[in-house]
Length: 184
Image (tube, rainbow, N blue to C red; front, side):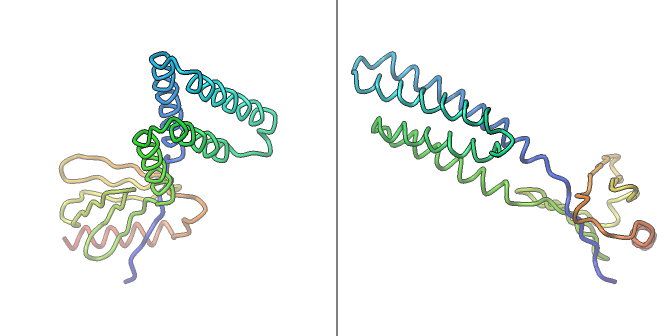
């Protein structure tokens, strides 16, 4: 029998938004400390200019929030953060921010999924993969887009399926799982 594969509803966008604001606040603190410690007028001018650009981006985003996505705003702010550090000749913070942003954007593109086959269940999260043999599972049920996996060790996983990509027949899937659980 062909395996069942489901794409899971992810909250990576929400996590990225929270991480963006954390990184932005951390950047503001680090830039403020650098400006306070440095008495050069060039540094103060860069910091004032950067604050002005961030304020302008924020106002533009607020005014055009129905036409501009938060994702675009975040990328613009992150680009100005990297540019700020490059103008300060601080290559390490710019490189760290760039690396973290590229890694975060890569993670946003990955989708979590779960595959059910006669061999077992493979839960592929954003980074890690977890495999379950049918003998490790007590019950598996799909109902109304909510997948429930109960393990023999009384761990309960409830996974929400992505409604746009989930087209499996619940009855045939539940029957398949029941047969595999009985066979193990």
